[in-house]
Each structure stands twice: as C-alpha cells, then as structure tokens.
Image 1 (cartoon, rainbow, N blue to C red):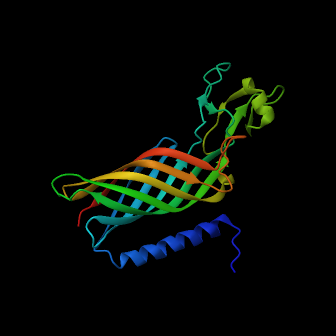
Image 2: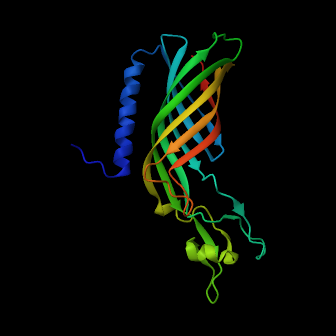
Length: 239
C-alpha cells in the first residue's frame, strides 16, 4: 500500500486519476478544442484553460479544466483605521490569504437543438481535485515604544484593534506558503456561440470548494467549506 502523507502526493494521485479517465473518454471523442479565459466569483477571481471533447452524441460534450484562483472567506470585510493618516485597508481577523490550483472534469448536456446561427445553451456539472494554498496575511501594528511591527494577527492583536495601522504588500509572506488538498464541485449553465471562427463560452454557476483539513483564512472561523457564485468567460478557435 502507498503511504500518502504530503498534499502534493495526494493532489498528484487524484490528478492522475482524472487525466487517465479523460484519456479513456478521449478515445470516443470526435474533436478536441482548447480555450482559455477568466473567472470572477463572489469569493475571488482567477484564470482557466480548458480542453473540450465533443461526444459522438451531439447532445453531450465534455471538457477538462486547469485553473488558478484566489479564495476569500465569506466573512471577510475590509476596513480602515481612521486613527491614522491615509491608513491601508485590512481584514480584521485574517491570518492567511488563500487560493487554489486544480483540475476538474465537466460533463455538459445540450438544452434544445444546436444551431450555429444562434447561441447554444448547456447545463453542466464539474468535479475534480484541488490544491489549496495559503500564505501568511501580514498587517502593520503600532506597538508603543517600538517601530511599527509587521506581524500576523492573533488574539492579543485583535484585542487591541485600535493599534492596527493596516495591511501591507501582498508579496510579504509569499515564501511561506503552505498547502492542503481538497475537492471542487460545481453546477452551471453555459452559453456558447461562434463568431469569426472564435468560440465564446460564458459559464455561470455555483461552486463548492471543500478542504477536509481546512484552508485556514480567518481566525476562529469555519475554514473547510467555501461556497460561491461565479461567472467564467473563455475563448477558443473553431475547427
């Protein structure tokens, strides 16, 4: 039996299983198309690349996606400490900034009949592994008798909120990243149309990211399940 202890290993094994299933599906596909675009959701934003597989059944299609996006906690709220001049905004109680890298497999089903002269409508569902990423979220803190400290919030700092000056550059702490594995599930609808040999896909839905060992973003909050509504737009070449 293989011992799986490192999140990289777990993510690799889950991803390889997804890719193997994709290649099995690809044997029955008529065509493959590639596209890329952006994601905007209620808890972050990111980029996505996709390989689209058209099934022999014209009502069905499949694709695999690779994506990178930020993840915010639903309770995050940016504030400013007006005690200081031109303070930087910060999130009270935030100890880590979050994000994710993942793969997912999507099944799409055409609603109605396909017509190249008008947009087509699909409903779909996606599932796949995800690697959650966190890095420390630093703030500037005014401690009496010392220069302004750049530290992570804790119970003492939050009990003295009036001394928090504000957030610092997002680059701070980027060399201290940590990882945990999770899964990605979503339900969505896709509007697809072709214009000047370019395929446009506009996808909208609800997404769930789940991390069994938590993606710890806010202090003393539930950090395992992240739900969001999202919109995604991609472009690809028609074949």
